[in-house]
Image 1 (cartoon, rainbow, N blue to C red):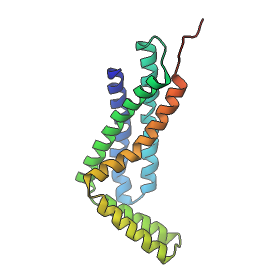
Image 2: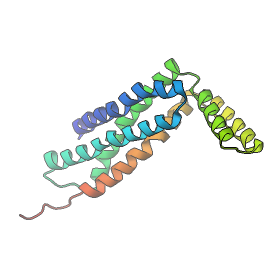
Image 3: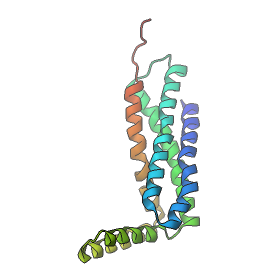
Image 4: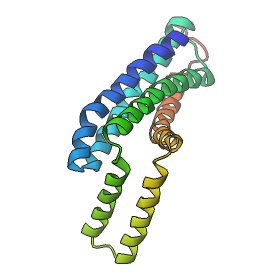
Length: 175
């Protein structure tokens, strides 16, 4: 199981981080955070296809074609954990070395979006305070790590749940 988890997790980590490294800078510079999120979540879904590959390979190559839901979920969870940890590590490097004012820029983007939509000044003021609090909180590396895991783990866990349900096989089909 360990080999499958490491290989699939590393491949998944590469799939999710390469687009982040390529497109984050462009989205960050032009302020198009929506495009960045679309690219990010699309790459997460592609990366977590490795969960299906890993569970299927474990079931077929190492477990005689059988796997319980629990074991399938465990294999998928560890693949997701490896890929997500790579994503978090790359984001930390990206954030601290290349875009240390990300939180402030993101906050300005959200406020400008509210202004463009014609929101009331009360709502704009509330969002301004919320974004300032977010930027202050985002200076803490522990919070950055937590928020980054919160961004990616739910997608991976959902994919793991689906894969475990689809790929579980308690007994071999009789031919």
